[in-house]
Image (tube, rainbow, N blue to C red):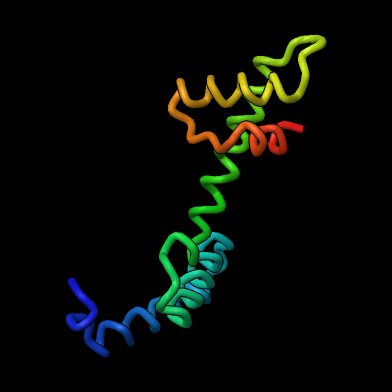
Length: 108
């Protein structure tokens, strides 16, 4: 489907659906409706930005790096050495890891 295949009838039905979901008592449904309304108001934004997916992924990565730091922390180990070790282990485990300096800021 491309932009030219979306009709005004389909766009209107999405708007009506969002309005209907907004009336729900479920807070999760209300949040979904709010994000969909934002998406409709800003059609040029990426889906991940509108739905906050990127931020959630960053928080999950940072939490994983902090957990690794707790596993690897040893008495007398400098923060710089710990950050390097955490970064190396994260890469081995398939966790996207930023630079050692950034890892250091995350685990401080």
